[in-house]
Structure formats: C-alpha cells, structure tokens
Length: 315
Ligand code: CDT
Image (cartoon, rainbow, N blue to C red):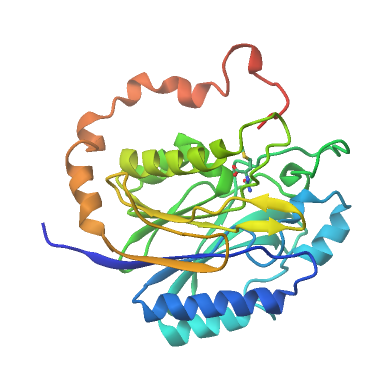
C-alpha cells in the first residue's frame, strides 16, 4: 500500500500560573507553532483550556469565571495572531479554550483550524469530570460540572483535504464510546488536549495510575479504531497543583511513536503514515465485515449498571 505521510505535531504546554496573561500564553503557543511548522507539521495540537491556568480548580461565581477565563469570540483580540501566523506558516491547529457563547452559555471547547486559518470544526466537551458543589476539605476543586454545560454537538469527524480528523477533550479519552463514534465516521486522526491532575481528590488513587491510564486509553483507542492519536497535555505545577505530562502521538498499531520527555513547553513530531490506519481498517478492524451491532443495544439503552446507577460523580 502506498504511504500517505502526514506531518503531525503535538505542542505540550508547561504550567500556566493564575497571574499569567493571555498574551504570555499565546506567545508560548506561537513559538511552538513555528517549531512544529519548521519540522514539517501540517497540524499542531495544543492542550485543553490552553489560554489560562486550569481554573476549574478554583471555587468562584460563574460571572467572575466568565470575566477571567472565558473567550467571548474565537478568534478574539488576543488569539487573532495565532490564526494569522498559522495562515502564514501554512499549518493547521487544534486549540482548547473556555467558550462563552453569544447567548451566555459556557462550554469546554476545542476548534480545528485549517492551514488557511479557517475554523473547520468545533467540539464541545461531553464527558465533564468532577463536581459542581464546593468541597472545602479537598486540596483543590475540579468544578467542570459547575462552569461548563455538557457539549451539545456530538462527536464529529471533519474531512479536511488530507485527513479525516476527529476531536475530543481530556476525560472523553477514558470512554470507549467517544472513539467508536468517531471510528464509525472513518476518523484517521483524533486530536485531544488534556489537563490531568496527578492527585485524585475523590479517593486515594496511586498517582502513577494517572499516567498509566492516560497512555492505556490512548493506545487501546488508537488500535481498536485504527486511528492516529495526537494528545497534548498542560503539564507541571500550576499554583501548587501538579498536572501530568505524557503528551504522545500513538499509531493505529497502538504503539507510542513520540512522547514528551518533560513537563514544560515541548513539541513532539512524527511523520504519520495514514495508510497504516487503512491497513487495520481493512483487516482486523474492518467494521462492516466484523461488527455485530445487534448485540450492542445495551450501550445506547443503558447508562450504568446495578447499584451505581444514578450515583453522584466519583471520578
Ligand atoms: N480535564 C479533565 O477532564 N481532567 C480529568 C480529571 C479526572 S481524572 C479521572 C481527566 O480525565 O484527566
């Protein structure tokens, strides 16, 4: 089979402190965008909520959150330069940010921007982790359920000129349904950003499991859906709270082909051969030949099992 090379880059961000400005963050993103383009990338993937510190760790009222951390337009005054630079460099990008819509709704969102700087796709996070109530005894909060609505646009795949690209955000990667819905649309690349605290405030989870489960889910999803996965962390210590790194590019074989070494700003790159996904889609994961949807009905009919159904969130 002919190779279909596609330059794929992931730009991991080190910590963003609460006092850091949008302009400072955007300058860091621009530097990495330039590096990604110079290495031959057609797409660079930035993290979830890439313009601010991971603010769901703070309890505040919604109005304050909107003023400090949300974007009322994309591109906006501080992010326009990202679009202009991408157009000049001829590179596409994925950018996660907190979206405030014109009618005042809030979503944890990512956009897919093409090499002409057009927004070609938008994804609003569906699997929101954490809680909406104040937990004063916890070392920090995880208030995504307070600040964001559940995404209302589903899991889509965008047919760009050179690749079919899907998007998801952070906690979505832990759920096989996320990937299969995109796999069934023929996704070739799935881009995702994440902010994963190494401490679980809900139960004493051994911290090493955070990295293990992160890579486990990416690798299983890449293989089972025959897609390339490009996953970008916001990493390091933000205001005393540690976020895991581990940004990675995973092939449809399930193998990690590039991985960030540290917890700072870092670009990783690989020349992804999209034909590898075609091979897996024609054989072991030939969905049309092998799937048995008549036996999968419970997946859509039932939300949870047994006694945990309807229980409060405990991630
Ligand atoms: N940002 C985000 O979604 N973080 C969650 C933390 C919960 S860990 C079970 C994540 O899935 O990484």
